[in-house]
Length: 170
Image (tube, rainbow, N blue to C red; front, side, top):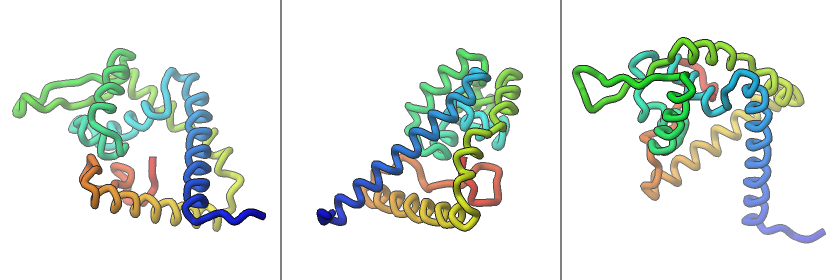
């Protein structure tokens, strides 16, 4: 059996994490396509619903660990689809607030159906679920440290789910 260096093992694990994530996102996108949304749009709807009418694009970017330009493009598409609307903040005219439209509120409610995720995660025991969560938090926190050290992280700190007191993620 060939010896794998720690660097190669790390890369192999990183590839495996990406494959699992991509497949889970694809399953979620297929599930949400029935309602005309995507997993990323559902995440924006979730955050906007949790924060409320005070939601600003920069806050969404922080929660989703995405660059503001990426979120701006996503919000453009969601606005065209009638899921959200942008409104200028009256006291601070340079600030834009994001609000759910009625269609967005309905899409949010539909996105709470997470059958694909539950089916996928059901292969884990309770102990494995807790272990995986602990390991992923550890990896996320270390990645945040590495990016902060290099001053490349576009957000102040890694957040938990908005409006939640738990460590649960989107």
